[in-house]
Length: 481
Image (tube, rainbow, N blue to C red; front, side, top):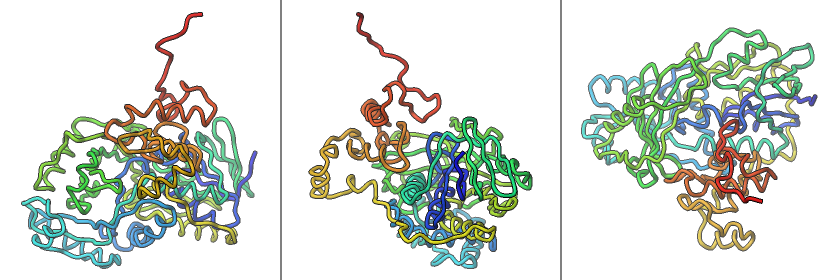
């Protein structure tokens, strides 16, 4: 049984940034993930919005960490080589009732410390967002709002933590935790580890993990949200992230460009009991199409949808983030719904402080390296820069994914770098091979060959996303002997 100073349960963006923060210190850290890859929970499928911080209630953890995390995000993404765009956020009003609500949001944002937030009238709104609906009368404008790729941030955070000495165990579904005076022993079905300190960042399953150490003080439900992603040629239809007035179920259906140039629509918001239900339904997608269309004066080209998907958010029963000790040397980081992504860098620092108050010694490493080279450098480089890549490594000259112009070299880097991709979706999240119009229809066999070759496994054993998501079952043609 291997022993660690700290075990972080959950390899989402919050757990990843906590692990990265802890990797600054002379600690032996292990990240435990139930799925076959990182970024497989709420991080895999969310809006990718770095919220400015005007929505959260004054004095709440959400308000505190949202504003602090938003201010940190540019530095964090620069260090990790992750794409970030400060495009601004709008909450659009269509009625006098909306105006009153927006006025309250502006006042709340100012009290929360959001820089530059203000109410703008329709002329300024249209100057900022030319395609806004003719029915709009005003808007909240938050210039500090931004966008980022959530799973890219998670992968980079965990990769940077691993490069600085942290360990990652995937397919480690926590089944039991035993506590003694000196350590915790954490069991999965096939192995177990021990740790002096534990951080519970298990997303929608955080309440179940907490119960294993006797903490039943909160519950977490899954809040389901469907999305539609439009092709990159649609990405310029909106400049800002466009929200409607929020309600008790969330911030409503948005229209937003992504950092990769697509246009994202959604999410719906429905509380569900089945924490494994990630299916999409026609009524949810129809609601997105109807509501998103009301935001713009130009028709949204739904025929250019390249995929639809569902995300599950961790909705805690307290109304705020749950970040506190469950018992000695065990920290809960639960109920991290929106604005969890925006808050994650600040949450990571706070959790390190909580661990220190619980007795963890934080002695800084002299050789900690916060920098991770960007994984999109080849794709976004100049012709001269690409030629230099190819001169050093000919695999960069072979394009495998034509929709996204992804080379063999980038795919190999995704398979070889921390945390390594082990399946098709893992490669897709790391370098966008299979993320384009055909969604891997043409490049998938070539990517599978690379995964099989690099890992020394049979081609037929390569899956879409781990588990039983087999792609190839048998050969269609055989050679008779």
